[in-house]
Length: 149
Image (tube, rainbow, N blue to C red; front, side, top):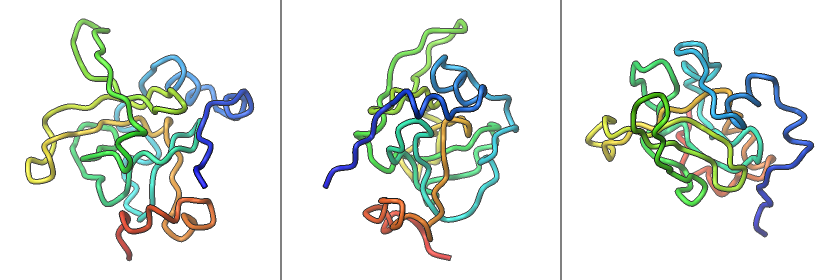
């Protein structure tokens, strides 16, 4: 059975003002302020709006940029990459495919031995699902992509 990942009025109503600003208005949280920046627990990160799985803890790394960084999406089809020419620069914006949430940006300066990409993601756009809760929350298919303790 396919999960039904989508943006709903109910999901939007549950967002904090910061989550709404970041995901719906393409905002950015202050560097170093995100709840998941230093999270090292095993699990997956899902879109705070739609619940679609986005990144695995096994692909998270310390980049020093001030935001959680990942080398690749857990499910590439759930991440859209768009040209972003705002703020006087050209970047690649990352948005969730089903929820159309602004997540952050991707840059070509990640670890070379892991593909060379750095997905720089706002914590406020994510919800963390710990490994022990993944099966119960419907994310059991991704357990093989998450490290064990």
